[in-house]
Image (cartoon, rainbow, N blue to C red):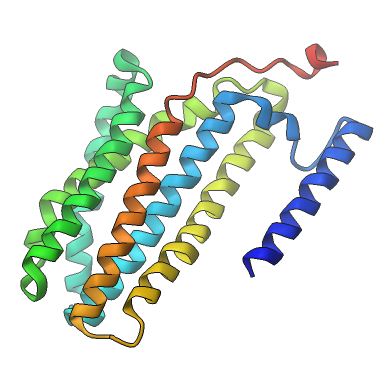
Amino acid sequence: MFGAAALVLTAFVANQRRTERLTQSSLLPMHLFANRGFSAGIVTQAAFSAAMAGFVLALVIYVQSGLGFSAIHSGLVLLPFSLGAFIGVGVSAPLGLKLGKVIPFAGAICQAAGIWWLARVVADQRSGFGAWDATPPMLLAGTGLGLLVVPLIDIALSTVSTDDAGAASGTYSTFQQLGSALGIAIIGAVFFHVVGDNFTEVGLRDGFTQASWWAVGGYLLSAAATLVPARPQRSAAARA
């Protein structure tokens, strides 16, 4: 499946390059990816979207199937994440004006730290794990999300010329969806590979722990991508 997807993607990119070269117009302007600021932004977006989607999948399966949590109880585990995101969004704009790209970097690091912390809590508490145990690490991870997402849009789109603003915005959203799909596929595959036939609390806990390390890796990748220096893109007239 991944091989077929890679072939389709390669064919699509080749088609778009040819179309842009011949007509100066394409569905996906490939010259956007020569813009380091934009490319760093979409890599950051895809990486943290993949990490978050895969992590949430593994967490929900673990608490519901491994610990027997109800849907409401599972929601309480995730609630601090949402509250943290609300806090992070509220402070990211004023802090971003003063500290710039430090804020999205710090946000990605907070997410990585929160997920690592939660994985350690789950390993320590085992079957005694509850919603209250998840509150501090999930609050930290959610705050990191809020710190990252708001300035990330500016980082990705601020260096794009006005001619390409619409295409860049659409591409940014597409990479968010692509990242989420890849995260579910890859981290989900890791989770179920570790669990295997051992669909018990112990097996599901082991699967969740391994999935969490992969999610931490995704967040660290997104943190690194925020540090790529941006450079303003030339307009279409300048490129011509």
